[in-house]
Every structure is written in structure tokens, then in C-alpha cells.
Length: 162
Image (cartoon, rainbow, N blue to C red; front, side):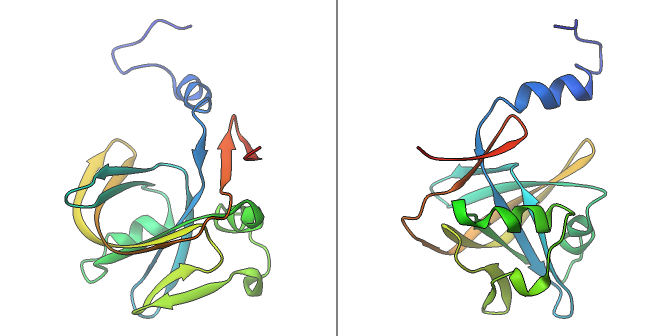
């Protein structure tokens, strides 16, 4: 291991180390009424049960960052992908497949991904600058889920339970 510099460990070492943390794969969605956008995110975490809060981290370079940064965009969606939705993770991570392969559905005007293990609708509660990312804290206003198996991400690869 490298000795930490005053700025912390190098980015490649940080990425390799945190790649050892298995996570689910989510698609973050938002709309400004004209544009509907989705982004693959594994940097998603539950923060609080009371009130129900979640947090998602979005890179400043992402199109989603510009959309969520708009004042009139007050809500975002989180869809937890199922093991059968690997193609959607790739699609929203910059390797798009056919748009008709995306199973969009709207919940009160907010786009979500159909067939996912869980969907959340969140109201932007706090926006926190954090290095080259912005953290969006959301109050969960709606949730639904299934008992399907989730898609997992570990050491830079997709995995399934079992």
C-alpha cells in the first residue's frame, strides 16, 4: 500500500480498494418536463429510517449532474436493478443499447425503470458539494419493491446472488 499523501491516496488505488465492496446497481432518473435522463450509480446508500433518507453521489461531469442541479428539478428516482437488467446498467453507464430496450414508466411525472427490484421517488432535500461529485440527499416519498434477485457489482464486474 502507498503511504497517504496530504490529499489522500491516489485515485486508482482508491477505486481498486473500494471495488472490493459489493454493491447493488441502481439507475438514478430525473426529468425537467422535457428531458428524461438516467444514470447508472453504485454510489447509493440509505441514510436514515426516520425520516426516510437516501443519498446518491453524482460526478460533476455527468449529464445527470446538470439536470439535478436545476432548481425546478425537485425530485429524482432510484431503480434498483434486477439480475436480468444488466443491459440497462450498461445502457445508462455510457454504452447505450436500443432505447426501446429501456422499460421506462412514469410515477407522477417522474421516470423510473420497470422490472427493477425496487423503485424509490425522492424529493431533493439537501445538495452537498464533495470533491469531484455532488451528494444528493433525498427524502423518500414513494417506494415499491419485488422479491426478484438484484444485480450486484464487485471488483469491476457484474454478479448475481447464489
